[in-house]
Every structure is written in C-alpha cells, then in structure tokens.
Length: 305
Image (cartoon, rainbow, N blue to C red; front, side, top):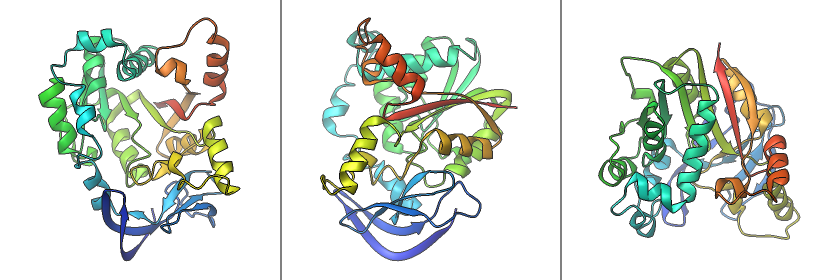
C-alpha cells in the first residue's frame, strides 16, 4: 500500500491526529483514482477504477487510527450501561440487534463448520460473537487491538480475548474458520491483515467477512445526493474517520482472491433481518436484498484451498 506523509494534523470531531495520503490497497499498480467527493476538511473519498474499492485520502496514520478505539467517544457511556449486570440469557431474551446479528453469524458459520471447530474472531470488539460462538458449541477465540474494548469484554461480558494486533497473535494451532466482521473498513492495511488471517487458517478452512457496501441502495442514494450537492453533511454515510474503506462485491472478491481465498458466496442482511423484525410479509423483499446485495453491508464466505 502506497502512503505519503503530509506532516499535517486533522481534527475530526473529538478525534485528532497526523494524516497521510494513500492509494488503492488492493491493486499492485493502482490506476489514477476517481474522486467521488471532497469533504470540507480536505479529505477526499476516492474510488479505484480497476478493483472499485472506495477509500479516504488523506486519512489518519496507523497510530492515530488505533488511538480512536481507546477513546470514550468511540464507545460512549450510554452504550456501556447496556452491559451492566450482563448475562447471555438476558442478552438473548432482549432481542437486541447485537444478539440477532451474533446469532446470524453463528448460523452462517454452521453452514460450513461443525460445533467443536476452532473459530477466530479478528477485531472482536467487546467479545459478543466470541460468547455466542461458544454457546453454539464452537471453540471461539477473539483478538482485539483496543485495550478499552478488551477491558469491556473481560469485565462486562466475561470473555478473555487477546489484546493485540492480529499480526502479533501466534497461537499453537490454526483455525477452521476466521471471522472479520465489520473490520476491514477500519484497518490501516487490509492486505496485511488478511495475509496474517490466511496464515492462521488451516487448509480447506473458511473466512467470513462483512464490510460496508457502497453498492447498497441507501448508500448509492446518499452518494448521488452528495455528488449533486443536494446534501452537504460531509459524506457521513461513509463513516470517516473510523471507516477508511468501503467495498462492493467486486472489490471484496478481488481482495480475498489476492490473498489466496476462493470466494464462495456474497449476500447482505436487510434491516429487518438484522433487527429481528423479519416476517412473512417482508420475506420476499428480504430475500431479494440478500441475493442481490442491496443492503448497506455485504458479507462474503471464502475458502482457503
């Protein structure tokens, strides 16, 4: 990944840090990128015409990016209160979106793996899927670089996750499955992350990935309105500064293939599905959104062969 230091400091809401110019992380020789939108603070949202990945440049350096996830602004006190006196049973009974999504992840994994298989959750946050995966019979472990989120996992959720970068994680075993849910949009270098995940995946094992989908209907509309200057809220749907990439099926598939994985399926979960509100009346719409990847996140299952 090509980077150019700018010696400039950017302040974005409560976050501040050094910034740098970057190019497409997927293509070995990136072509001239297309500017999609320029924010008022000078941050551009660019798209590679070859692989179609969308990225922010300039953006925070790696040190500044990691610092975001140690601030209370990233995990506000009101959100933390939801996990006071936490138990899996209460969480499940609440029907919270966090539980529904964790259960959806587990159900997806069961299509390819069996209980007793080792599963690694990379960038596991506060450890919710690690907990649900164990409830479903998998041998789940989590790796999380943020000390703040790791402390929440340990002290509130009761899950002892590994507090380190995935590049520094060296377990005595490999994994049948590796999950990267809502991670590759945050990381400094997705190629470096996936290279380490590939090494930690056993032959014939699977990787489960979920990323923002700029080809989703809502994101397409927001992008169009911004480009037409009919909306001027700073391209908020991209999620900068903590989101520095956005993908579609093509860019995500090319990234995984570059790392040695064979993509098997792509799909998205509608808002109804993610919130547990899907019903018979919404089933047709939910199925179309899932099949044609029309929601704001796209998921891929790929295999190491």
